[in-house]
Image 1 (cartoon, rainbow, N blue to C red):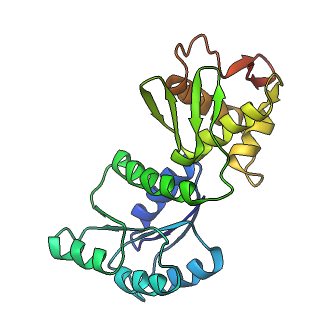
Image 2: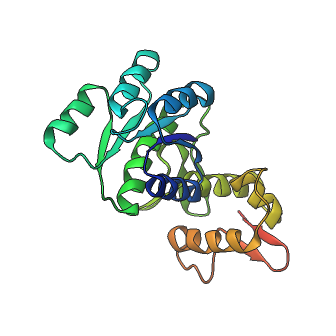
Length: 226
């Protein structure tokens, strides 16, 4: 899933890119409004995060222009302009959500995941639900469920679980898992993969120290046994 970020503050922009890429989103970013429109047309993002005060063209102008071409494309404003009138203007221009700076990583991820779930639900080619042991994975919601317990999933989590499910009983080496979930352009990094698997286990396993879904095959990789 591809995200366009238009934010003129370099530190905020780089922080947003790092956070979203760590979740498995493909990110394109720029610091001015005119470049944002150019990137939008070139990259066809699934949703857009816009600052309001940018050189070249404001976030309002970019939002209005995008809305003439893509009425349903999700757009989130991320801005230090916290007055009610600013939020109202943003919504009038067609924004789906409005995040006020300063913000927490947890808040941004929650808002982005809500938008991502809507995007996944609208994709006709999105695969259906599947079971991993007693865990129900729901791709259209970016969620997994076990009885009454609901777990949020990132796009990268979903890719890993889908690959394990599609290769039940097979040992998947670390390079295969890494390239599938991080992309072919990323150099395989076992430490990064193992850390992500460790965090994922804490959410989807009943007992992360004795996993039933993501089993370690020492010296090779991981496996799911039905």
